[in-house]
Length: 118
Image (tube, rainbow, N blue to C red):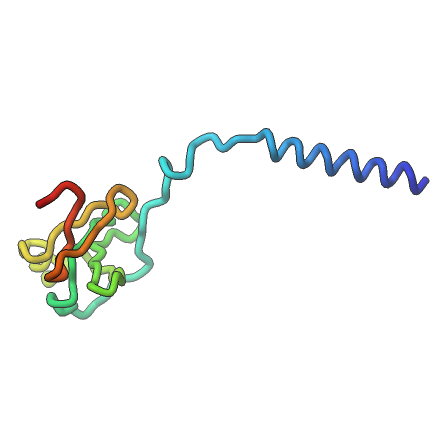
């Protein structure tokens, strides 16, 4: 009896390992990465001098503008707030690419430089 239980256990283990080894994800993770969405909005305006830019998260359950600070922190804000509209219309606060699409580098002055830009 002990031999048959051990054999059954070994068979199930091999079957599980084989199915896990041969199964493939249907869509590569890098192609179908989840969007960055916010759970709540920052109510108080942020100091502009702390910002390097912003990203849009408008297709989430809670639409938001995500401001990125010099310390790489992301702060969510309500896109309909006046201070947010003022910031996104200010040319010193640039629209950043989606963080999954491009990498950012900093210039000596602390500004964000996109790949292939002067």
